[in-house]
Image 1 (tube, rainbow, N blue to C red):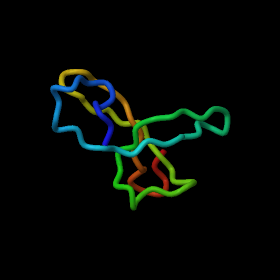
Image 2: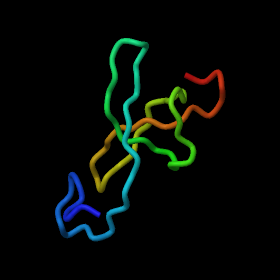
Image 3: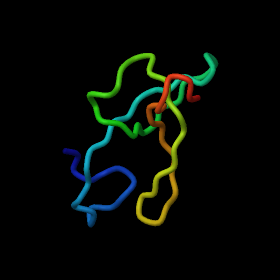
Image 4: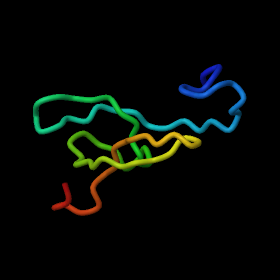
Length: 72
């Protein structure tokens, strides 16, 4: 556990670790991002979609696995 969670101060003692990974966009660029998935769901080549989440009152973005094979 890090001494203080990223992006929030030490007053947030309820920090829960989350997965981070690289997502490739159309074979052109890779971005490092928070991943909204359980660790056991993740694998190389998994299709992802952009999702919104909130940290406190701050809207942020992450990637999550696509729900169906055809979903982009």
